[in-house]
Image 1 (cartoon, rainbow, N blue to C red):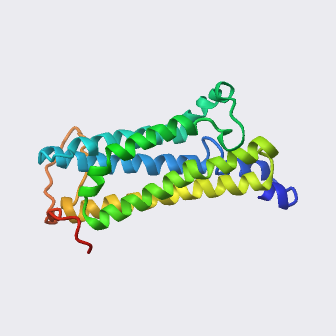
Image 2: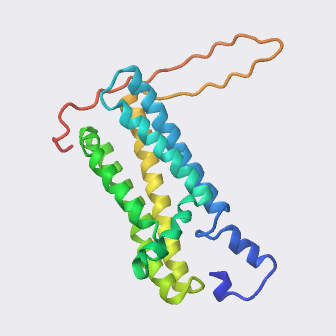
Image 3: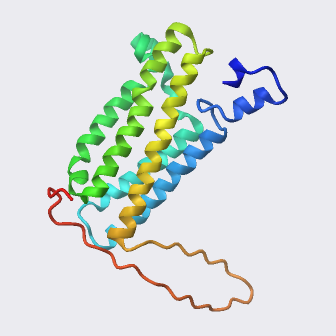
Length: 229
C-alpha cells in the first residue's frame, strides 16, 4: 500500500518487494513455506506412530505429509505458476485467468473424496479444526484467486483492488495453516501422547547423559465419532 498512498522514502521499493504477500522468495513466502514444512513434519511424526500401531489410516497420514511437503516447495518457488501456459489452450479470461485453478480444482475434488472417510473417523474436535483449516486454505488459495484473476485480466495487476484481493488470499492461506498446525499439535498431545525429537552430534569424547522424560499418556480415539461433544 505504501507504493500507492505514501510518498517516496528510502528503501520503499525494497521493503514493498520484501513484504509483498503476492511476491516470490520474500519474507511472506518463506514464512508460508516454513509453516507448510512444519505441518509436513508433524504429519510425518503422526504417520510414524500410526505405522508402529498398524493403524488402518497410516498411509493417509503419510500421503498428507508428502502433500504438505510439496505445498511447501511450491510456496517457495511458485511452481504452480508454470501452469499459466494453459491460458492459451483454454482461452481463459475473467475468473479463470489464472489457469492453474482448473487442474488444481480437479485434484482438490479427488483429495476430498479420497479423504472423506479419514476425516470422518477423526475425533470431533480434530475433525472440526481440519474442516475449518481446509475451508480457509482452499477458500483463500482458489476462492480468492478467481476474483484476483478477473481483476488481473480486466484492470491489470498494478492497482489497489488487485493488491487487496491477493493480500486477503494469502492471509486466508496463512490462517488456514495456523489452524491446521493447532489441530495437529492438539491431536498429538491428546491422542498420540506427545512427540519428541532428539538430535545427537557425535564428538571425540562422547559422554552419556541421562534425561528424565515425563511421558504423556495417549488417549484412544473415540470409537463413536458421531456423538457431538
